[in-house]
Image (cartoon, rainbow, N blue to C red; front, side, top):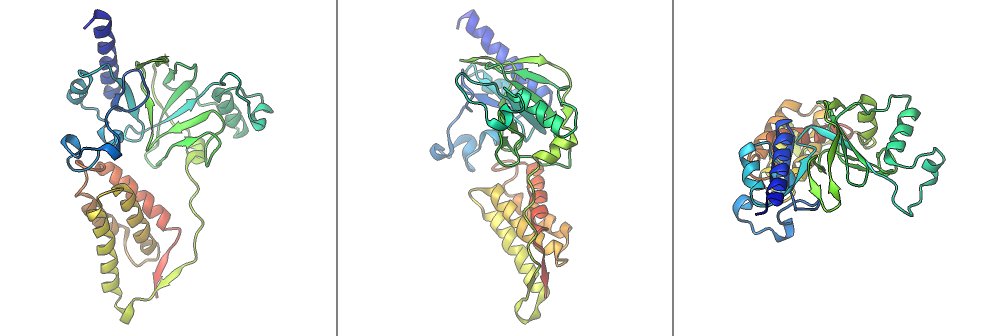
Length: 318
């Protein structure tokens, strides 16, 4: 191996270890690219680390130095930072590409980049521009602004103007997303620090804008179990939803979320308590935690999200 290649490999290993030391969960990216290393789910061999089911890049992300050293000895991998497990929300501010048109709404505001759009969004909200946090420059000239997500918030990815996104040229990465970590060398160039300082907490006004609006509340639907056997009906409901979670072989996190929504309706309808629902679903999810689909922390977050959605559609025992 050439001294140049050896130096590059060491640089990216050091960058991966540095990211992990900050509490960021990292995983390998294919050398020179922004794509996760490893096989896709549709070509999973079902052996090795995937013996219990396909493990995604988010599940493989780690802060363990020994696992990182072992992985990065195989190739000059780039560094993927799994934002959800790391407790991060990263604002990805892109730049204007050659020949690209600026949408009318943003052109009228004088915006020509994601950085400009964020400034407009902050101004319209009457807030300070959230720029005083760890910042990384991308090879295209864009910026990654790193923020800690408050403990009471669960954020997903957003893209541009779609959904509850912040605007053109502004993407956010949280649960279900990742960013290319600082120190990564791709074919387009290197990701490097602009300001290697502290990671600020995501401002509350941005948390509110990035949190999806809950679905509209549905009418309260009474439940009329046959023969008035209230407790037997509720026991069966808990057992059925917990069974779906325990027996799930695919989309386990989605199954857990759906079960929490269904039982959350009964919690809001005063038919069940939140504690008994959480206990039943965590016990059922325990079959998959750690080795298959998600961590205990992720399972708790999913249950919390599902209960919150379910409470918008309460169901009461008649």
